[in-house]
Length: 154
Image (cartoon, rainbow, N blue to C red; front, side):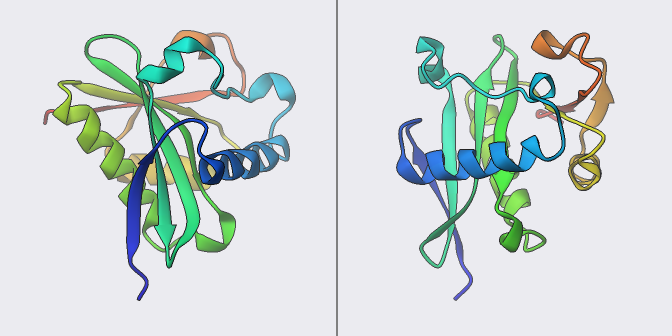
């Protein structure tokens, strides 16, 4: 009855686009524009990114993406569960699904970025085995970013 299903989608998927818009709206209540790091869906490299939408009873309720950074590391991007559907295990299912896909493709580490205002997210990532690391990539020098990493092979 409350089954969660995961569907791999393209970056142009309507449900994914709607969830990303909700994510952007949510983040804009927490951070100034320079503190929000999206994913350029028009970048040709986006084809290397794996997108997933979670559905509950046919409704799109969450999304996430995993994008390669190099041969060993992927980054979790555009990770979001719609507010009315939080605290139901959906976020865990999405994250574990993305990690499993990355691991099956030979990646050893998963990284991500969040921020202090997202206390719920920080707690969630730590609970699922992510450890805080120094900012990486585009987050270096951002006063808004907290970065985390998890080894996928242990």
